[in-house]
Image (cartoon, rainbow, N blue to C red; front, side, top):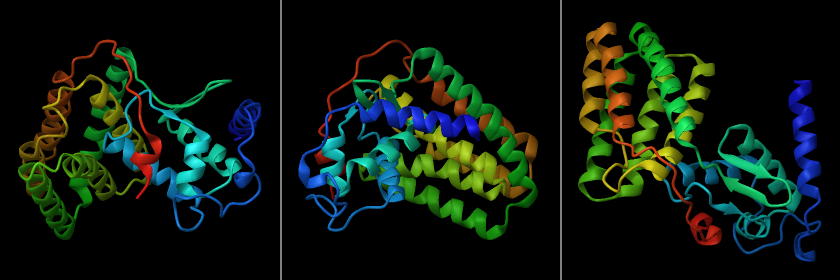
Length: 258
C-alpha cells in the first residue's frame, strides 16, 4: 500500500503543474453546467467507465480537465483523483505535461488482455458451476434475451453494454469478489481493444455463444463450459485486426453529458 500511495502522490504532483482552471471551478464543487449537482468521484468514474465499455470514448481520446469539470460540476482536484483511479485500472494513461488520455492498447497488450481473460474466465466458469443457483441461471437467460433484442433492433450501444455485462454477471455468480474485479477491468480493456482493432461488424460477443455457455452451466458440465468459454474468447480475439492504429478526436462534453 505504501507504493500505491507514493504513486498517487506522484501523479497528483505531475498533474498539479498544469495551468489552473478558471475561477468558477477554483474552490466550488457546485459550479459548472453539466450535472445539476456536484457528482461524486464514484459517479464520475462510472460514467467514464461506461462510456469506454460502450465504445463512445475511443482509445487515445483526451480527457481535458476543464471539460470534465464542466460536465460533472466539480472542482479540478476531484477530477484529478478520478483520473488517478482510472489510471490504476488501466483505462486512462496520465502523461506528464500533456494530460489524461483513454488508453490505447498496443497489439501485444491486446494479446495479453485476451490471454488473461481466457485464464481467469475459465476459472470463473469452474467456480460458477459449483455454486450458481437456478435464479442466477434464469437471470443470465433474461440478460441474453436483452442482448438479442438490442442487436436485432440495431441498438449498438446497448448491445455492447449488455455483452460485456454478461461476463461480469457470470463472474459475480462464481462468488469470488477478487476475480470479479479483475473481470470488470478486463472487460473494459477489451472494449478499448475491440474499439481499436475490431471491424464495424464486431461490436459485441456472440449471443448464441452466451446461450451455449448458460446451457453448460445449467447442466453442471464444467468441462464443456470451460471449453466453450475458451472457444468464445478465442473467437472474439481472432476477429480482431491486431495491428497499430491511430486514435480519433472526441467531444468529451457531448459524450459524457446527459
